[in-house]
Amino acid sequence: MIKGVIFDLDGTLIDSMQIWYRIDRELASENGIQDLSREVSERIKKMSINEAAQFFIDELGFTMTKQQIISRIEEMVRIEYEENIRLKPFVGEVLDFLDERGIPFCAATATYKGLAEAVMKRCGIYGRMKFLLTDVEYPKGKKFPDIFLGAAERMGTLPGDTLVVEDSLHCLQTASAAGFMTAAVYDESAAPERAEIERTAGFYAESLRDIKNYIAGKLL
Image (cartoon, rainbow, N blue to C red):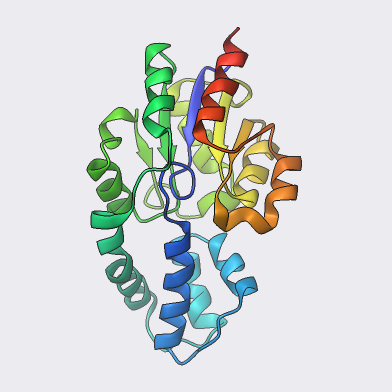
């Protein structure tokens, strides 16, 4: 039985992943790199913000400091999170379902805390979460299971009865290896990895409505 749910944010609850790919390319262009490959973008996607900033310096030769890179990225994406990014379909429906059944849920993201809070508050879901965990509490990101284990501990659940809902392959792999139940929700940015995501996740969903139906089945 599912006793708690950990939601990813970008690509799972909010429709934002293409923005991050665009930001990577724009930042590279500002620093003299005109054609950032998809392969490099995929590598960056798996990093925490701090790791990505260091990668730009070490691997791509940026002359900016790490903090300057982080500040520039924040500047580039803030308006999107504060004004433009929208929820993915059926978010309210699945959260209502969990509330009605008394199942606690939270959000865990590698996105900057300020940006995550801004978009969640504007979209009306921040106050509905039991809590939000970000890069501030877990700077190593989701290549390590700490953020998922910490979320389960705070909800008072065990990994084996906690569902992690993600769109990215490496996050699903991390959660699965740590003993969590996993469900993947489709996002266009992860389409190239779809086959592997389907093999990794305990359940694959085209939308969050399918996630709701999956949880309902587990409660029977």
